[in-house]
Image 1: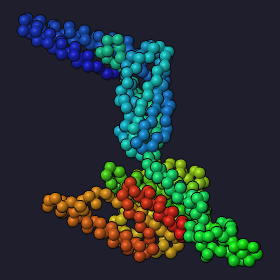
Image 2: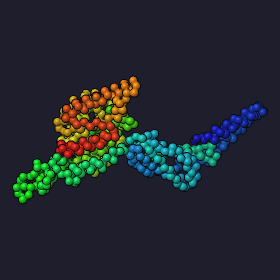
Image 3: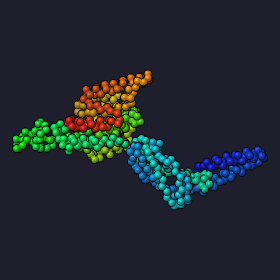
Image 4: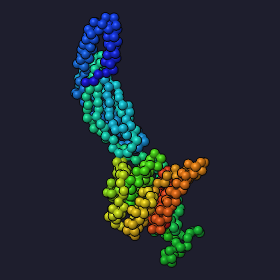
Length: 435
């Protein structure tokens, strides 16, 4: 049962009537109060008795089950009313991060009728958004009192990473086609796998001449090369405390996911196999052995519910997990933060076990605010900010140089440039035949 605002308004009017009666005829004030309260209670009780029952309602859901972060999903409730006419309102409850609108919807369902109510979701966080309960309030004719009931109508909308970097994919695929020789760029240095033989033309690299084949023919022939295929790429996401830091309004982990998706899409198109590992002190997500056409959906599904843990990552455990997952030589891409203490105390002591067997690239999200702070000189506060920013940039440069001496290639770029920079690094390694 629920009382509406009309009961409160009637109570205020009754209180005013009692005050008037008390001023005119004090003995009659008590009688006026009793009569008014009795009438109000009787009307509310009658109104409640005439309200349609909520429990017999049959409610079902339909609509979207998957949405990208920042986009909109629609979930529809279908309400069947087997009883008397129902006039009231409905509230479809979702977690706050689901961004559900509208919060309350008026309903008017005839006997035996059906109504549909749509809820629009605009999530602000990744993961599974599960519907809570559907609360229905049924008013009586006077709208003084209402029956109220709750219905469990389960539904889950999975919010997946936005993949904003997919806008870079056509450009990277064009470069990949050049490496594959579709734009007449089959020349030495554009790959290391033999492709075919063709007649020598002016401008060809003489190092590509196949002398044995030339001796058997009447013309000079050269070998053509293409980038390696069927290589293996392992993307490792650091899901520890460093990935929880925000660059602007976006967590570092989300920026890393965006870069990982572009790299995986490009590598799958290049004919390479892509695996994913998310790690802090344990394996949080893993994609292994997915077909090239399915690797991107598999990664998106694995990343959807991944949230950073506020714990220090176990780098020894991570290296052990990588070595256990990738037994043959492959390209390992670590997406983490260039934190001096964490890298020197955690990663560096375990790095040699990784670099001796695999080619390692470390990609980190740089904060563009640091560059803005480093340029400030307008007053004393800005000078101190600039000094702090300069020190932070020097530390990152030192860590990058240290990793470089250990055989690790470092990609350090702001969130909007990191996916493209990482994809360019992959293409450069592929062109150089280092995969």
